[in-house]
Each structure stands twice: as structure tokens, then as C-alpha cells.
Image (cartoon, rainbow, N blue to C red; front, side):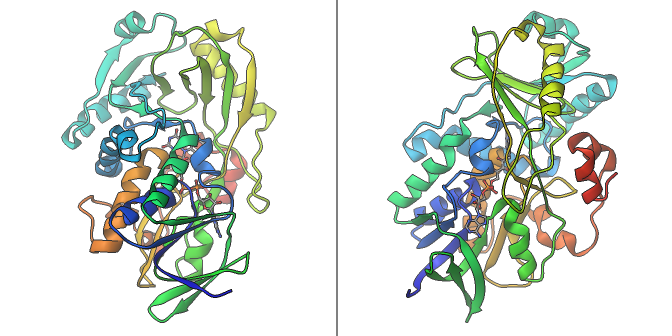
Length: 395
Ligand SMILES: Cc1cc2nc3c(=O)[nH]c(=O)nc-3n(C[C@H](O)[C@H](O)[C@H](O)COP(=O)(O)OP(=O)(O)OC[C@H]3O[C@@H](n4cnc5c(N)ncnc54)[C@H](O)[C@@H]3O)c2cc1C
């Protein structure tokens, strides 16, 4: 099969690949996106939908705030609903250490332009009278929001297609070779793509592509577990999130309760399968009922997880390759990629077309793995099950 030539080829049609394709196409570039399944079929379409600003790594704040502004205008921009809902987000401290954390963040995030409100137990009881458990204090962020993640990547892909991008679903990239100053991609269906610029947005699989270009990373895969109950009468307008991530829940627009909570579980990466171990159902439900015992009568409808890429320092890789001109990486979003996704796509389009982006993203550079990264072991132990910790050497 003869090779089609394009300006930019993108490997992976999750939110990152689809958003980048859209912003490149909007600026008139020829784009081919290769997705081996369906766009948004992996992490990007199965997530909790949380557009959380509170509690972010401070170095992510400029990117996160740029993303939130894009989310706020996204339905108008793409011309379809993604069920964007400015629900607000209550970060709940379950002990004094959490309380100190939210208080510190309240002061630290202000210079970046994020306002949070600190609430003591009495204020919490006034606004959420049904909330039980060892709640010490909380922090409220009115600008935090949610979306229906299943709708987002397809909406970006359709809008990119309308601008001329070639979005190919069911096409797996199987080999990459350097060709002059560009790249030649071979695909499982026998097709080839020639491109000047290549974006590696292959999610948890991005590490293998980077490694091929002499940029090994400590990326590993894990599954954040989600549960959903039957619908019930409206009692909750916002996201409730324990500071340690042990429980996160919200009520969907239909009334179902969507529940998540650390630690994340191992996945079968080789076979691309992820399962929810029954022990997780028990721990997540027990934690939620501690805070919301009035939900104990609800039927659990479904549980699922996904395959997400993580790094031990819990921030993604975003930026140019340090070994290969024309190659860009954006993978391993550590469970936070939905919220920042639109801004990551915008920044990548700027990097590719202008050679720079006004948003500070230097901390995400792949070169940080040239030397061993320091992992916060105690933090990782709360976020990942033990067998995963063994793999990343953070026991
Ligand atoms: C259950 C769950 C809950 C989450 N909750 C939240 C949340 O509430 N808020 C938040 O901000 N983030 C959340 N996240 C994280 C967020 O979903 C991800 O960080 C984000 O979707 C990553 O997008 P991506 O495009 O990098 O990866 P993906 O969506 O995984 O996309 C990568 C794509 O690359 C494709 N691919 C890989 N290799 C090839 C190849 N060789 N050829 C062709 N295609 C290839 C894959 O098929 C895949 O579709 C959650 C994640 C999960 C799994």
C-alpha cells in the first residue's frame, strides 16, 4: 500500500491525541491520527469525569487553569454537548494532617488565580447536613467541574475531522522508522504514513515508543476503580473528595452515584485487560457509607476500571523528544489527564507549530528521567496497591 504524506502524525486517539489533532487542524495543518480501537476507548472514555483544580501539583496550575478556561467554552467551540457541569468540588479533610494540607493549598493556589474557601465542621454541616464520618474541615472550589468523559474525545475527533484531519480508527501503528527529517509509520492493516512531525500520545503504551528513540522512562500501568449505583433522589450537587483520595463520589445528572477511590489496582497490560477485584468493591463501598450512610440501600449497578499510565513522580511527560527532532511525547497522565487534556492539546499544537508555548510546561520534560526520580513513597503507598509498589520500587 502506498504511503500518504502528512504534516503531523499522531499515535493514539485518547483525549490528548484528539485535542491536539483538533488544535493543529484549526491552524490549517494536515493531520493523520492513528487509533487502534475507537477514539476515547481507553482511559479517556472510562474516567470519573472530574475536572478538579483543587489539590493539583502547583507546577500544574498554569496548565490546569488554561485547561479549565478551555473546558468552560468547549461545548460552544466543538458545537456539541460534553455534559460540562460546573458542580464545584468539596475536598474533605478526614484528619488534622489533611486539614493542614488543604489550608496550605488554599494559600499556595491563590497566586495562580484559584480561589478556594476553607470550611469548618459547622459550615460543612450547614451545607451538607447528611455528611458523616471523621470530617475535620474542608475546602470548597466553585470553579471545579465535571464532564461525561465518554463524549469528549469523539467530540474533539469529529470537530477535527470537520476541519480536514484524517482520524483513522481501528488502525494500529506497528513500526516507526526515520525517513529523512521525518518518519515512516507502518500499520497493522498494511497502510503506511509519512510525516514531518510525530506525536506519541499512546497513553500507557507511550513508554515503548519513547524507549525506541533512546528515552526510557519508568512509566507503569494501573487501574483506578469506579463503581456506579442505581439512581436516587437528588441530594448532592458537587463532587465530594477525601484529601487522601480514599473516597471520591458525585451524583450524575440522572441521579446515579459514581464512586471512586484509591488505591489503584494492577492491570493485565500485555493483554490490555483490566478487572476490578472484589476486595476493592468492599473497601470503596465501606468508605463511602462511612461518609454517606443514607445511601446504604442503593443497588450497585456496575464496576469498571481502565489502563492508565503513571510515573513515580505523579506528573506526565509532555514536550519535545531530547533525542529526535520532530518527535513529541505526551503520555503517562497519572490519573489527572482529563482535566488538563484540552490545554495539553493546545500547548502541543503551539510547540509543534511555533516552537514554543506561553504555558510553563518545562517540569514535564522527558529529560527528567535521565537521572533517577525521587518518589514520595508514603504518598505512592496510599495511591497504589502493594504489588504495584513492588514494581515501582516504592514499598
Ligand atoms: C478509571 C479512570 C478514572 C479517571 N478519572 C479521571 C478524572 O476524574 N479526572 C482526570 O483528570 N483524569 C482522570 N483519569 C485519567 C484520564 O482519563 C487520563 O489521564 C487521560 O484520559 C489520558 O489520555 P490519553 O490520551 O493520554 O490516553 P488514552 O485515553 O489511554 O489514549 C491512548 C490511546 O492510544 C492508543 N494506542 C496506543 N498504542 C497505539 C498504537 N500502537 N497504535 C494506535 N493506537 C494506539 C490506545 O488505544 C488509546 O486509545 C482517569 C483514568 C481512569 C482510567
